[in-house]
Image 1 (cartoon, one colour):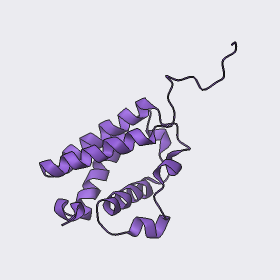
Image 2 (cartoon, rainbow, N blue to C red):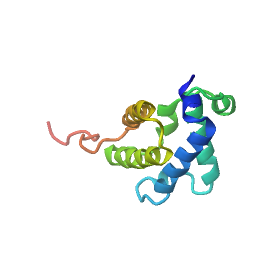
Image 3 (cartoon, one colour):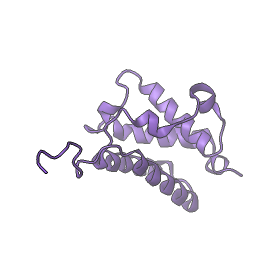
Length: 133
């Protein structure tokens, strides 16, 4: 059985995404990065991506092509604070969705790796050239 089947299919991912966005919509750092006028679309895209990734239907790729996560997220300023806030809301959503313990760990591990991979800004490093040598 796939992960998708073991957690109960689409219903699990809908619960996860609903709980995740409940936190995102109240987050002053993350909210501006999400479509202000397409709440339902944002939820559907994340649900579709996650269910496809975890062995469910390939609807996401059929509708949107290859996920290309880094490219799709490149326009957004994702720094360590945004990553940590995203992970906070996603971990809380995993608590709500409540997968079995071993699957929970597998899911959390993936989400952690994915969140770290999306960081594209780091204020700890200078990006402008030095003014003197």
